Structures are given as structure tokens and as C-alpha cells.
Image 1 (tube, helix red, strand yellow):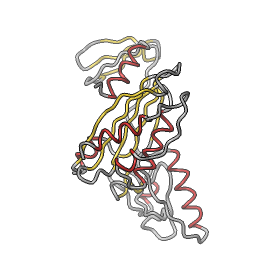
Image 2 (cartoon, one colour):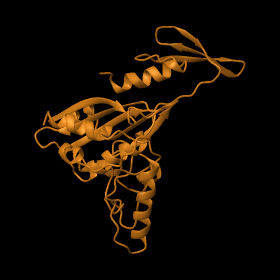
Image 3 (tube, one colour):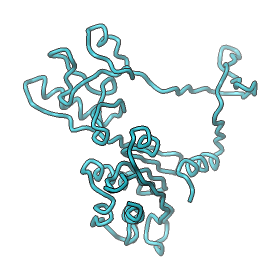
Image 4 (spheres, one colour):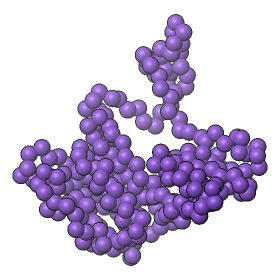
Length: 260
């Protein structure tokens, strides 16, 4: 069975994107006032028309630090689920703030627009005397790589290992639609669950259609502390243009149930 990152790499390759993994850029060379060449650590030279540097992000929280507000080692602002900081009367929400993770049961830094909107609503309500609480996140995200949809929610295998979970996992390959209905494609599902209990910890999906909404089923399941057995019994919608009788979600859950 293919690993999901390999499927994404193949999609990039089909679209003439060359990946250089486990290497780094030593320097950029300017030509006529613009970056025109990149020198790698092994002295290989690559000509460039444009250079985009993506090296992660850190929250701009210096003003909070100067005000005596507690800052996490990530640089994000520590808050409780009411979005309160350690300084009375000061709240924080959005990409500069930590967020409660429902699986890990602690604050983490995963800046996403959906989280920022929900946190802002909670902070605003409490600022005017309300009693709102941010219920937390499970780390759900989706992106598109050319014609490929890629999504994840909850913990990855690496996350689960770092956090000390005794876990099991699987990968299944299924059809996005009924096999006889035209226009369908393959869907890959990876599930991570807690050993013995079967509680779902995380999910990853890759495919050309239906991925963004299917991952939401797993996000809901994680928030509800459902097990792979619970998921395998879900009454999901079916019609040949949209899904097989046994949706890839159900197949993945019932397959992993064998390992619990």
C-alpha cells in the first residue's frame, strides 16, 4: 500500500514539480538586482526566476510580552478556554494565541483561520460580561495539490508516538464513487486509533474528490471520542455519484477494528 506522502509527491512530479528533499539552500545569488540563482549545500546551482521562502511562522507577540503577559515557548500567548491571559482584563485570540487541543487535553499552537474566528467570538462575548468557553480544536486542515485533495485531523502517527499513546494504524485504498459509476477515482484513508479502546486519535486522507467533507466526519468523531467501531456503524449518505455503498470511511474504520 502506498504511503500518503508518496501519493502527493507523485502528483507534484506529474505536474513538473521537482522536489529536493533533505537538502538546504546555502545562499542566493543576485543578478541585476533580483535573486537569479540558488546555491545548495552541496554547491549545486539552480537558476531561478522567482524565490519564495517558506520557513514557518512565529506569532508577533512582543507587545504582549512587554505587558507582562505569559508567552509559550512557541512564542504564542498563553490563554485559558475563556481566552483570558494571565493579566486580568486582557484577552487574546487568533493566530497569536494558543488553543486547547481536545485529544491532548492541553494548549497547543496551531494557527488556523477557523480557530481564530471561534476564539474571537468567545473573547468578544466574555469582554462584555458573557460566560463563553472555547471548546477546543483537533487540528483539522485541508489543502489542494493541483488536482489532489489532501486533509488531516487529530494526531499523526508521529504525534501519537511523541505523546506516548499506545496506538494502531492502517491505510486503505477505496473508490470515491460506486465502481460502476463514471468519473470516480481512488481515495486513500489512514486512521490512527488508541490500542485496546479503539478511540480514534487521527485521520489522514488523499484523493481527487470528496476528501474535504469526509475528513470532517473524522474530525467530528474525534471530538465526540468515538471508537473505530462507532465509526464503522455510522449511517452515512449513499448514492452512486457520490460514494460506494460502503464509504471509504466505513471501510477504513472496520479494517482498523480488527487490530484493536
